[in-house]
Image 1 (cartoon, rainbow, N blue to C red):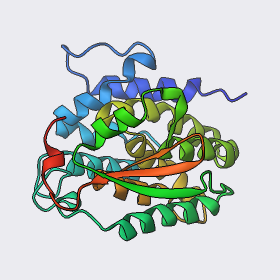
Image 2 (cartoon, rainbow, N blue to C red):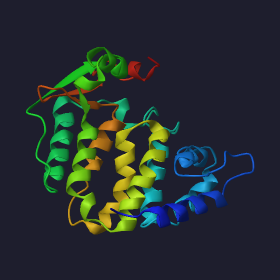
Image 3 (tube, rainbow, N blue to C red):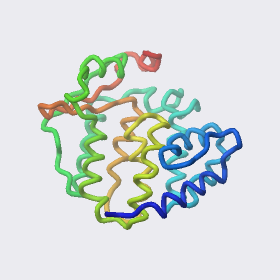
Length: 238
């Protein structure tokens, strides 16, 4: 069993150094879950937030990418120059899925679904909620990757990388409530150790296109994507 306490204590102590007096105190790992939300609200903290982590420069770069894509700028998910402002064809979306599968197979992960379809909808999240009313009846595509990273990659990494991956995973959830964001940023810990492609990038590209993959019990993958006929209406609140 790995002992991650020395690393966790170091990172918690570091995060305390850039807190303001009115911030909620960091007493343990659970209390650090919302720290990155504070970094998002106070961007000057980004320069120091990841300096104590292995490969911290690349972690920071990916985190900044996420903030830019999820923000209000011209190239954000909702910006006028975003990738999602001009939805891709079904073929282009399926190509990203196939690229993800090919990269995941490099690390021993075989495809975990046997067919794929594209569901075009004006309200992506609402349609998913209608089709997936029972949480036990489906699995998000990125969750499948999570399991395969845990099974095929993490067992062989050094203790500090293993601890960093798990330490940062939960705080990253609160940035966008997205598995794609979690794994895309945390891949920066693994990339220097692996001689192979990044399987998180194609799924992050799908996230930027407001496209979500759901695997159903019959191993059918549905990709929920914006309508081709109206490029903006799905961006309105559900």
